[in-house]
Image (spheres, each protein chain N blue to C red):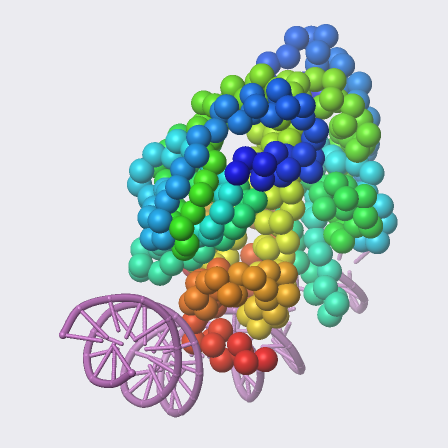
Length: 188
Length: 188
DNA sequence: CGCGCGATTGAGTAATTTCAAATCTAGTGG
DNA sequence: CCACTAGATTTGAAATTACTCAATCGCGCG
């Protein structure tokens, strides 16, 4: 359902039906099953994605094979390996589906065209990226300031739904704690 | 010198003389001495700043009075408390000058006008914000993946100049390590 | 029924913090 | 030029936090 996208965009700008149709024409729909990869480390990243339905994770796997989760992406979130996408270099992250997923896919070229052709959409993406920046700054601050347990509590308060949809090991990989440590304070 | 700003902007878009004059007209110059505050926690944040000359830090001070440095801002960097700036809420950060400073100041209203009146500048800020997003994501990853010593080394390799301009205690507050720990591995 | 993934628990270890004290340094006034 | 002081840095030792390794437990699904 593309209404979801329209509603999402119209939280920031407003569009006529014709304008939205034009916007939508730059996207394609992709459906993927749980465990499928949307982006694979080492491969080029042609697209960014808007999540209509389902849940994905974006993760970096280090030299020791340890996984760090950069981002969870649920409904109404945008996700890609933006460093790779923007610089046209091979992906550093794996992005894969934790559930069956429905995505709207926007290629680099189409985003460029869309933004060039629509000041409004350029504005939308500027604001949206700014919100992402603010969110990341909060996360940095939380990593600097809070211990593992209080990061756990904060995440739980902010996204309780996530804990129903994701195994705790992944929550740990997102928070920067070992599974064992997280397990020790999950029962308050 | 506003040439610095023009050169900075033209790394992403190109401007005619007239266009740049218009851009510049949205900014005002501010000169501040070492130790002066540009933003103070609790106060409203009307502006974002482009650093022409000098060095600032943006920092969060927690309930225990411990300072965490969100960002250093040297020449050609943008700085503000963006959460406060964007949401028009009181600042959470202190931003103050570590050296005598020359800034170009852009008010919220003027940024809005500037972006609304110039698709190019809207584009510039979108890209710039995107780069900031990517940088922050790298920092999150580094906090998740690397131990204190390797974060120290990375910062040193990436910004050697910073270490000449800033006391080590602040480097520690940026990296998320105690001064003592940082001191212990600063001699390789 | 048994396999396999996820979660928990225990014990020992490593990294980093905190507290305290000593040392060094740059800038100031005499 | 020198002594003095405040801030910055280093060093030491104890305490804390979280990690790793290992074993166990629980449960859903084929």
